[in-house]
Length: 338
Image (cartoon, rainbow, N blue to C red; front, side):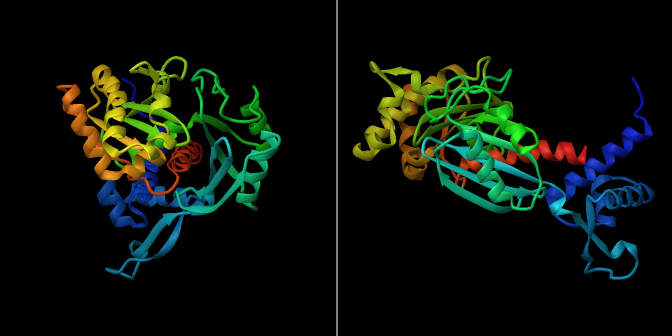
């Protein structure tokens, strides 16, 4: 077993302190010592390094003791880096810009039209203003191949063509990642929504499209080709599932019938994966709320002996956009923080 070098130990300690500041907000040196278990000299050194590196700054003084260096409260330099999350759909594109702390500082929404390279670059630039963007994550409907990050099926996005990810990266001057939009919504549910604290769950998405995302062991599962969760292709009672539970169909059906159809789709995941939790998302899934979730759970109990909780999405606003921002922040923080 190799012992960590001094440089590696410093890097580990610095990241530990930065993650604590992200999680808890501004902290004093004594608080950092208590939370990290590091010695006074070690914490003093890392504070000096991070301050000189432009990663943290003094944001005020502690209420308990306003004298001496320990009275200083240190926080992250929020403007040290910014990221862009993009939700690209059939008809609209939405962009959110967030600083390194995760605070959204700007957003834009526009109709989709024209060349997609120009469209994405223009809307991101408009939202960013004078801010440099460290990382961009784009969510779009369709299968995204895990190996090369390109969209395999792009029928739902007008004007899509191969090579767009590379063109976006070149145009925006930084890394761009493409991800299936329901997968990004699942990240938002896991981190801020109905699936917080869950290691395993399935997000069933019914809105302007029908799909699902699978999280097992706390990790998003995409499958070899990126097709994990493409429940819309599943045949239920002789009909493709995507035609049984569209948003327009949901508006015509009573809640009991819609819940029965949703339960048949969820049953496929329960039978194969036994996730223990199904989250109903998308416009139709979220609009049904706790009542629809309870009805789907009751139907599932009739179909499967595996105990499965069903919850309505609790992510406020655009879950896809939030998942894109969270994913971009993970990448940016690894880049900036080390």
